[in-house]
Length: 197
Image 1 (cartoon, rainbow, N blue to C red):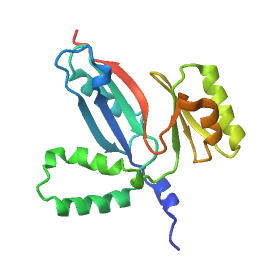
Image 2: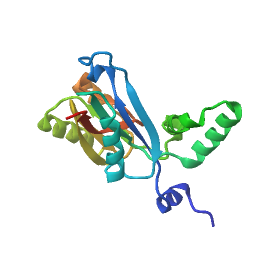
Image 3: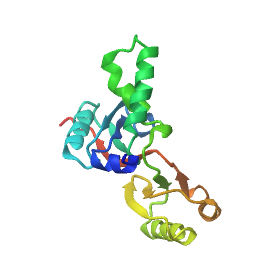
Image 4: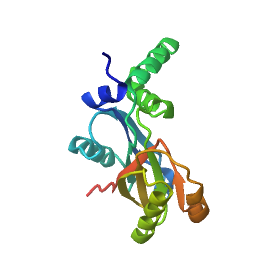
């Protein structure tokens, strides 16, 4: 008897997208600044020391006082879908530069249709723990079956990850532009500033 897809995913390491980026909006004060980004797929957890070591190397390659961020996909990626799309891409684009292959693989993996899970990310843009708790209580009042899986502190508030979707109209009425539903996106992990001393 065949195993269902979810059981199969649990038996092997899940695949995620990691992104290191230094953005224009974080580095307006740096003269001649050019945005940098490094995206790749990984089966390591977002807190794995090997990923932080790689992020540290990305930061160290920046200019003095360059602000760098590390993001990680909320949902695991569907490896079979990614393989199929990647094969089609390679056939249609034989000219691809293999040096840039890692970035292309990450961009395919990051597509919403290639998510293997249905977790949602709320970007709660209020830097206040009481308001964050109130927002989470409102989620539970709307649908008690929705489970908050993780709360992540971000530079301007919180990332709140829930196990599944639900009707957010009541949240919109109360909180307006204080939050953004990201559905399948990348969650903030860390921010570091390049120091050359």
